[in-house]
Image (cartoon, rainbow, N blue to C red; front, side, top):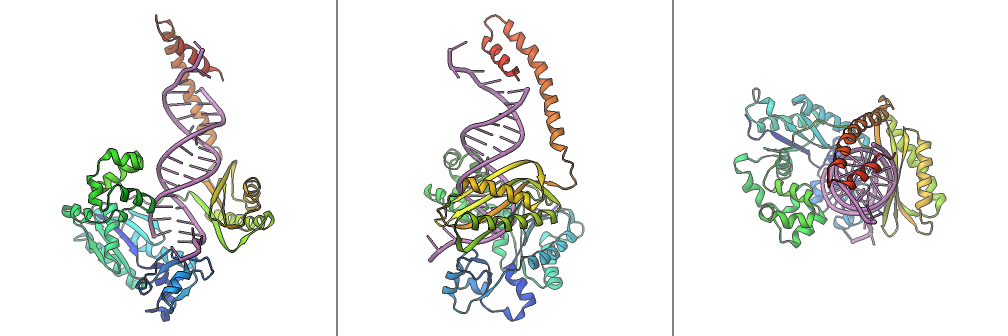
Length: 397
DNA sequence: TCTGGGGTCCTAGGACCC
DNA sequence: TCTGGGGTCCTAGGACCC
């Protein structure tokens, strides 16, 4: 049995390397992928660009300032999607237990391969060499006992390497890392933890559960507390269905007034409709997202009885929501339209009705029990007159 | 350094139902 | 006489991830 059966495979500077596949002249240049507009940010930075301190999500203006020789390549998400499918096909050729995390990374559970491979790191080598020879891209792999540890390890494997964290010594490895490295600890949680004097994951493991729960809420506190002790029983779950589809755009020049906003909603709604139909789903909750020039952001959503995949319908709901919510005096820098509550196109619309019927049936059964139980209580000396009253009320309807 | 676009999950309050 | 508990759905916002 493998002690470290979980692999986290993460492509290195994925968008950049895909661009270099078809444009070899970009190799060794200081290149980033991203828009060139005044409000664009870096979508992916090459390792050459990272040497200048350039990172994903950094404003492009700033990236340019840091490296005069910067080459900016506009993103081609269609191409990245196609290459991603090739990469995932290799994963699935190795094992069916593949859980995609994003377009360029996945967890693999290789515990079933122990009869055919000497070790998980041998499997990692195989995957990396196949991605390299069959597609031409670099990838890094973390190998560990759990998803959490494997994901940490893959970051230390980069670029173009493998890192194994042996189960026997994983706490030594884990506890020296800064808390910010933890999956789920971002800016806000990181700041809260810093205030509590928590700098490393080891600090987190030793801080009182009560304090943590008070500051972060019981759910997040429990989750992080367990992870800090390398307790992560989550299994590798092969991919689930998409839950929402949305389109949003930040404009180079702010939109002003309802007419401009409505025109933009129209375009967005049509794009959402097209993508929803291509995915073979329909949705019943339409969401509009508005960001004003001062960066305050609001969302408004509305749920309709029957799921739709029609652009015009999405548009008309988005329009109503916006009409109610929009402050017409304020310039709008971002507008988004989304559809959620997705159901498969082939799925019969009945489903919710059946569920309602079931609930009703269950409720009448519960009522029957309550009727008997309730009357018993009322007849008990000193018993619940109050309960009797409540029972009365609960039956009204 | 004036801050993208595509997602997921969580929380919290209120409506509504029995 | 101000009484409840349990459940689900909806909405809005926020944290987080790549």
